[in-house]
Length: 204
Image (cartoon, rainbow, N blue to C red; front, side):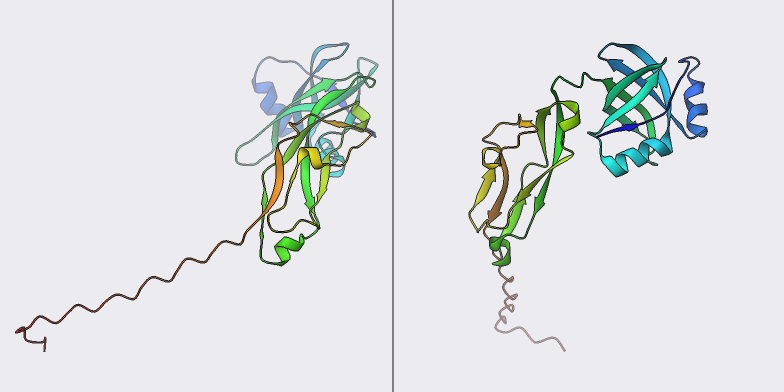
């Protein structure tokens, strides 16, 4: 599903214009890619944050650039280290009939029987590279671990096939394993009392 985002073309000089845009609640951005010349724009920070919150980073974002409808994906974002506010966004114009690759979050679902028995859930992969046409890109991939017992694991090859996308990540990569419960550290031995020295008078 595509969502719309308003954009405004912007100047790139002087650099102080970027700070001015941010003070106005806008984010400096650039659009490039399929049938689009590199175009500096600005977008509403609030609108962009709402799209990401409601639809995720892999959704198709439709823009109007010079009267032309452009379908984009977010390629890269930069954020302020302290405030986490966006400082710059790069949008990639895409062909809706061609497959593209993105990362999709791995989300473990269910409580494994092994964990109920005291095992430890060890997740090794937190994202997978997938390939699909832009309107079929998943935001996340759910991995059901309910039936995993202690000693069991799941690799990329174990994932159910989905007709909408193809997982590109190496099939042998391990996603999750149920480990044996860690043995408790033995309590430190009590300090041995110092032996009494013959002929030494006890302290008063």
